[in-house]
Length: 109
Image (tube, rainbow, N blue to C red; front, side, top):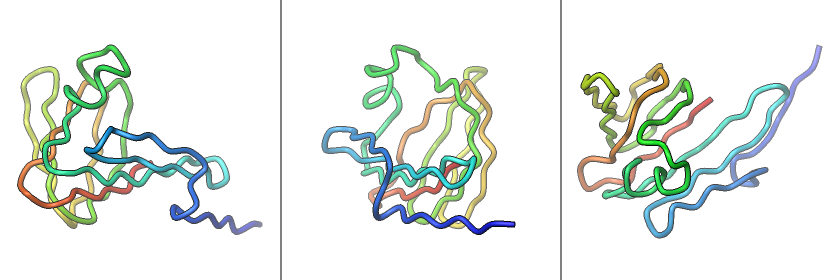
């Protein structure tokens, strides 16, 4: 048996989105956990697509929203807004956009 401990305040990796936000990751055992802090105006199209070259995120996410709101648009046109306190499972083929005027903080694995 083991207990693993890492702090998101000392990330193993960081993804900067210009002035619009940051995502920080730690590897905890076999799991990579991300904390994203995204400012109003952040969007997949504006901030991530130029780096990835794809119009929709190809990853699967398990996500808890700590604060703020984010709107996810699926490739099929479905839209879901996540709010503080929500847990989401997001399948590949989505693009997100922070909505409102509050910082969106999410924990993702």
